Length: 230
Image 1 (cartoon, rainbow, N blue to C red):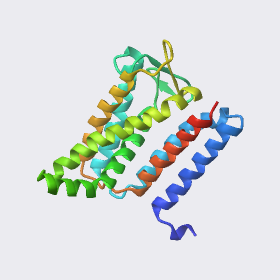
Image 2: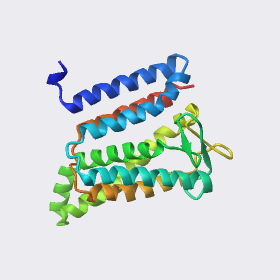
Image 3: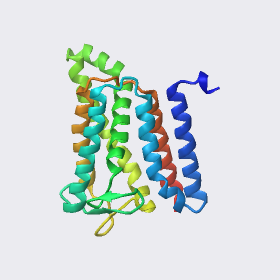
């Protein structure tokens, strides 16, 4: 049966299966084991994204590397100085740490920004073409602006959806009065825009149906946890 399925269909099935098991485990069972499995789920999601990426050239792997490194470095600065994101600290759920930051947090930055970039690049292509014709603006310029600005907005929306759940599950916590500062989202949109500029100008295929599916799966996962997790 699996011989008849495409790579993105197989990857989508695996992602739905593991997120579904995790969701049920966290909501209805002793959630300690399932929360600790978050690190495995992140690695699996990243591996599936690389697996379904059609054009695995040096530009693609450069984007993966730079996103992981910049994302991780930004978190190190944030946790240890408060200059980025605000006053927060990580729990032990996400695995081994360096400089008080989980090593896997850079992988999470890659997953979020790659999926957001693919989504915007896929769904807005026709709209951009029509808008460019009406405004007589170069479509390449409009597309770059859209991927960077709209992709960063989508990434911040994902972070907004994730934040309350992450706090309840012990991924991280906000110090002080525990509220999530606006500065967190300002930093998120700024760093996301910079990395999505790299995404846009790196020459690799921006078509990946699984990336769209994964973003929808993760957003539904965190939306349901945000709604029903006590």
